[in-house]
Image (cartoon, rainbow, N blue to C red; front, side):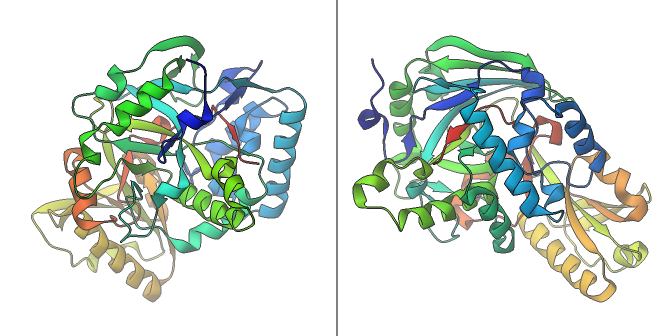
Amino acid sequence: MPYSKDKADTGIIHIPEILLPADADMGVWAVNACDQFTGDATYWREVERTTSGKPSTYHLIFPEIYLGDEPERRIASINGAMREYLSSGVFKEVDGGFVLVERETESGTRTGIVLAVDLESYSFVPDDRALIRSTEATILDRLPPRVKIRENALLELPHVMLLYDDAENSVLNSVRRGEVLYDFELSMGGGHVRGTYITNAEEVCAAFLSLPCLKGEDKMLFAVGDGNHSLAAAKLCWERAKAGLDEESAKVHPARFALCEAVNIYDPALFFRPIHRFIKTKSPEEFANGWRLSGQSFATVVINGFKRQMPFPADVPEGIRMLDEYIAGFLTKYGGEVDYIHGDADLIALTAEGAGVLLPAIAKEDFFSLILSGGNLPKKTFSMGEGNEKRYYIEAKRIK
């Protein structure tokens, strides 16, 4: 069936025109999500070295480790690279459809669908009962720099991963495979990835819209698993753009639709990992000695590589709220700063300069019920997999 924008738009899901590199070294082209390894300058220096002078998504994204380092210059460079790539034939267009992504990692093979969602159906406001919802508290102070990065960009490249609740696997069972679009080893220990064109995107849309989660009183199709602040920035940019458009233009404007990867929460290779806290401080022992959290579970405080088990609430989200309050009070008294670290080893490696807290994970089978019953989780509650398992930038879409 030929692609039809009129048939493609469901009010939630949109069939996008995806851009992929026409002729590039895909191992160089694809780089990890911008919000990973924010405490590891060596990681990003190596990415910069291996991509220098070559077509790569690294030149189109803003690694968050550099948010405080001449951001205006870097944003100008990103926008210039987007213009150059579009004008010089770096990209080819994939005829309207979805991409089936099979990602081999240490956790197994995770399967997702790259599609676009209508930002009119998404909200990061905690009390909104939107069809697409944020899952953790949105830190409003983190949005302005991300809006600045996106507001004049011609393209978006997604690291956003959406979760959907499909115990019967009906969506993936509806997929018909077409051409293999890419198949390669990811850099920096990211594993292997294969992308296959989905020939029946409209039928896949119908399968999504037939899920039981859209039949209840409180309807929610997608919960944001990764990239909450990036999607929130996309929403704010769309609201600004929409204000200057007439009704018909607003229906089809490319900034209205955000490219994402949707993954079934029951995917066997999808694991929820905790996002640990690192408190950079000259008073790490005072941090450990001031610990007053209690409960039937445990967290682990690490100082200079040495671990100390501490009591922690069995209700993990509530425990994280309490911990974050304690950290905020500690930093006010003793000074320092907090960072959010993916991976046990990555956190432990930092603890010569402060105190780390290794946190327990939430159970993924509880995830949707937590969101539906309690709204947003605390900021940085969970991560889907380790840092090197995050979504790499591969596909792109025009937003202007």
